[in-house]
Image (spheres, rainbow, N blue to C red):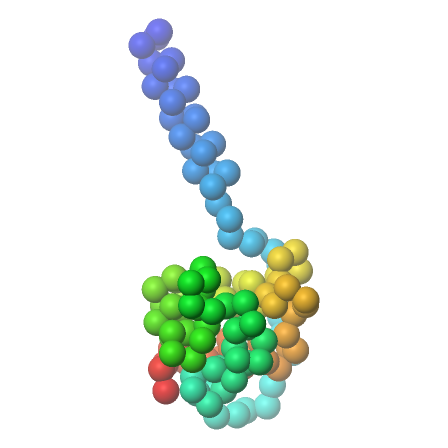
Length: 128
């Protein structure tokens, strides 16, 4: 029994460390109101202008997530910010709808803008 005690304690410490390292913002998101049927959003025409207007004052080359026009698409995928299988679980969507640590930091974007970004992710987050 004495030989198992250090193993059990070690496993307990490891589980505790893994649990505390979790940084995902698990908050309940109010469902967005339904929208009229519109064409699927395009990355260059619809998404990039949102980033340019609301994000690139901070999210520039060298920042944790570079959302400049030249780098945004690659960064979103390589930093695992979008999840096309579970769009509502995309880090991008979670941060945009977060009540505790929203992006942009001065408050959430308008609901129709967030809805458009979510629709883009649902449509496969294409680089079009």
